[in-house]
Amino acid sequence: MSERGAEFFGQWISDNVIRGNVGADIISVAELTDKLFSDAKEAGVSENEIEEEVGSAYEAILAAIMGREIMDPGGKSD
Image (cartoon, rainbow, N blue to C red; front, side):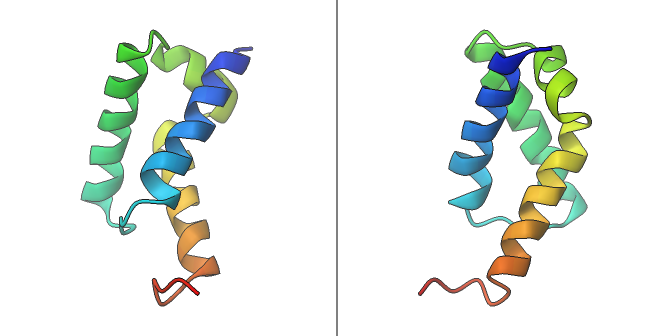
């Protein structure tokens, strides 16, 4: 198990999905998955380290997007 992969993924989701302005369309999720793995590689974290902890990165990103949209369906901040 890779705690480092999980930590990287959690911080990356916070920086790129929770604070970002992305939608849950297939292209956005695929592009974010590619960006995740590119950013991870630059940080010295392998795709395997991430997916050991979160399973499918694509599905985890989609779930994060959907969770954000459910919490804030209008895309507005208070």
